[in-house]
Amino acid sequence: MSGNWRHPIPTPDCYLMSRVLYDIHHQSSHLQRYVADPDDYMKDIPLKPELKAAIRDNNIGVMYLEGVNPLLLRAHCLGLRIPEGDFVASLRAIEPMLASEAQNG
Amino acid sequence: MAEIVGVFATSHTPVMLNFPDAIGQQDREAIFAAFQAIGHQLIEADPQAVVVISDDHIHNFFLDNLPAFCIGTTDSYLAPVEHWLKVEKHVLKGDKALGAFLLTEALENGFDPAFSMDLTLDHGVLTPLHLAGVADRVSVVPILINCVQPPLPTMRRAYQWGRFLGDALRRYEGLERVAILATGGISHDISTPRMGMVNEAFDREFLRLLQQSDIERLLNYATDHVDEAGNGAEEIRTWLMAHGAAGQAVFQTHYYQAMPAWYTGIALGSWASRGGL
Image (cartoon, rainbow over all chains, first blue to last red; front, side, top):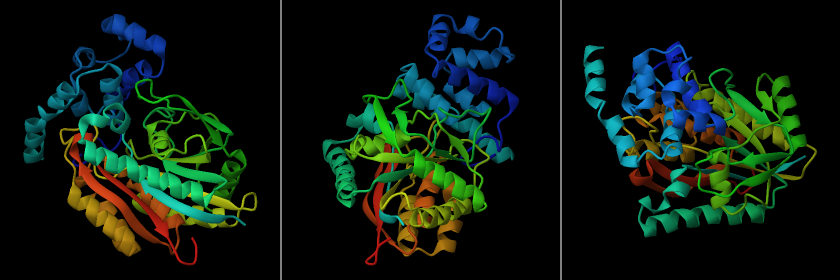
């Protein structure tokens, strides 16, 4: 989907990734567990390892490409105090991929 | 019958509170002064309740249950919900009777809102009220539009909602004076590769069309061009609802400036009419 959104409706993977971000920024006990050990926090969530790794590694660009809700990405940045420059740079880094997508339809 | 004594619209962004110094002092002071001016107008209008049209930024609602429109129907609202927002906690007074009236009227008039008696409101509602200096001085009825997760309600539907809202408020017998504050937009991107790029041309044309009030052109423009203005610009639905509620009143822009360092176009405006709203 072009324009403002990646998908016209969230995919199941997008739902699960968004769920992780939603839970850790709305329940303090979840945030504590996540910060202590992200892999352990996500161990029972039925996501592919590379998608869990994207969350764990704060790979904002990959999460965006998967269609994670952008408001949750923003909350994740502010909530984990990811430096603004790193956050924006991770998003800018995927511009070539988006350009390629657009070129290939 | 209630009189609509003021209709206002403002941008909002958490950056205003979390990183205010990201922009220069002159711009910052001008923006905060514009919010204060709206606060003064609101207080002078002396509304007994303010309908705040905003969106929930995936806090009260998630992808497991996300209403297109939701009306708050209780007597107090904690804010902000964000643990990371740099502002003191507030308990906003709510007007549950007006919320219940709008809910019932909506259902009887072909609209199908959700309702909630337990909303913890976010920066979208709190930031403008806080910067205007009225957060603890007004009773609110929040109306939250899904502007944050497709599929979204159409721009036209937001405007239709506004028409309904204005008519319903004018026939409400529980209060004499009510106001409306729409918050959101205008051009900005949140967590996309375009973040920090503001489409000033979109903003200025949208504001011009609001003032011109050619409804078809306005709605077509909003629908056809919002993808060029960013995912945050989807919040212009709140402005369109306010525009519908304002009826024949004329929109005026109080302030506009593209603020890429705050990631958004900042606009504030109101609707006014010689003969009242």
